[in-house]
Image 1 (cartoon, rainbow, N blue to C red):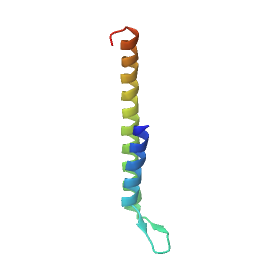
Image 2 (cartoon, rainbow, N blue to C red):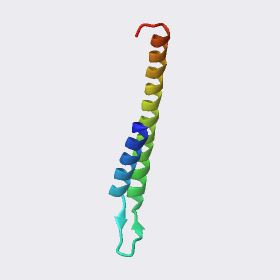
Image 3 (spheres, one colour):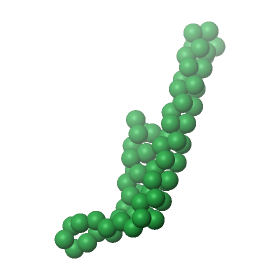
Image 4 (cartoon, rainbow, N blue to C red):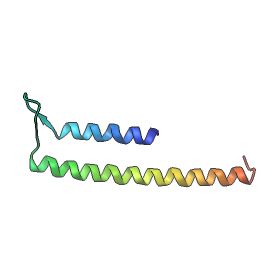
Length: 71
């Protein structure tokens, strides 16, 4: 759950940097800002998925140790 909240927090932080809020509440993004945001979002998603895989592997290893009564 912490990983999900961390990912959302980073996504919101990244999106706030690429957005220009107008007085009427609309948003304005340049082409470069949109592309930069897409790259950052892709990198964030990739790192997040990698972290989830690593946590899953560590959980499997922990469960194997528990079954073997090493802990």
